[in-house]
Length: 454
Image (cartoon, helix red, strand yellow):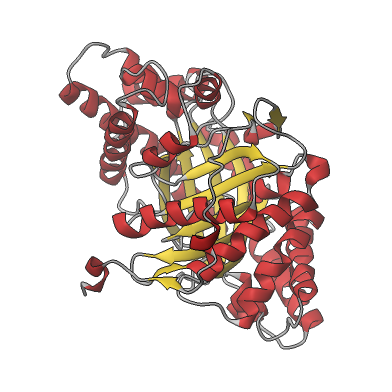
C-alpha cells in the first residue's frame, strides 16, 4: 500500500527535483513485414508501425495528466532494419528509403524518436549489414527522428574489428553529411558491445528478435531526486549513503512501474521492462556529475570518481530490482557529457579527460556518450576509441557504447550547441598518436575465456 507520506514525497520529487518518466517506448516487431519488393516492404513497415503506435502519444499524455507525472518522450523501437530489409535492399540507397519510411511514420504518429535502424554484427557481417551500415550517413542526414545503432562486439563472440574499423569511417562520414548542423547526425548513432534487446533509451533502442510482437518498455530518470536525498546525509558513512541511494531508486522505479502498467493496459500491449537509468539533462539540478560531487569529489574526474560512480550504479540497480520484477534495459547511471551540466563544468575546469571518462565507463551503465571531439579527428582514431570501449564491455560482461561527435570545422576550446535534451558540449582533445596499424589488421578479437560458460 502507498501511504500519504509517500504521495507527498513523490509530488516533491516531480515538482522540485526533476523526477520524470523519460520515455515510454513501444517496441514493434517488423519480421512479418518482410517482402522482396522494396515498395511493398516500406508500405508494410509504415502500416504496421502506424496501426501499432497511433495511440501511443495520446495515451502517454493522458497518463501524464491524470497522474501528474511528467512523461517527457514517447518513442518507438523496431526490429533491426538490416534483418528486415535484407531481401529487398540491394544498395545503400534502398536502405535509406526504409529510413525515410521510418521517419515519415514516426512523424505521423507524433513520437519523438524511432530507433532500430540497426545491425547486429558482433561476429560477422552479411551483405545486408554492410549495405545498411554504408547507408547510415545518408539515412541520418536526410531524416529527423531516425536513430541508428550497430552492435559490433559481445562477451560471447568477441569484437568484430572489421565492423569497428568501418564504423570509424561511418561516424566521420555522418559528421560530414550533417556538418551544417554541427555534425548532429552523430548524436543519433551509437556503436555497442553487448547491446540489450529491450533498451528504451535513444539512440540505441531496437526491438530484439527474442521479444514479443509488441511491447511497452519504460525508462525512468531521477538524478535530481538522488542528489537531493544525498544532501540530507552529508558526512554520513558509506552504509548510510548506500541505503539512501537504494531507497530513493526504489521510489523512483515504483513511479515507472505505475506508468508502465497503466500504458500497457490502455494500449493493450504487454509490459516489458522498467529501465531505471539516471539519465541527466542540461537542466540545473538534473546531473549525475552533481551526485558524484555530493558523494564527495570536487568535480567529476577527480580521484575517487570511478569508485563513487561504481557505488552509485550498484545501489541504483539494487533499489530498482526491489521495486519491479522486470528491471531491464541498461539501468544505472549514464555519463553523457553534453547532456549533463555538471559534466560540462568538469570538462571546462580541466578535471575530466577522455581517458578518465573511459575509466568511468568500466563501472557505469553505458559508455563514451555524447562527447564532442575535433572535426579533423582521423577515422582510424575514432575506430581505436570504439575498440577500447568495446573491449571494456566484452571483458566485463556489460553493455558499453560509443557516441562520439567529430564536429566538422571546430576544434578543442570551441563549444558546440545541440539544443534540447542533447544540450551543448565543449570539444574535448583526443590522443594524437596513431593506432592505424592496429585497427587496419582486420578480423576478429576473440571472446575472453569466461564467455564459454554454459
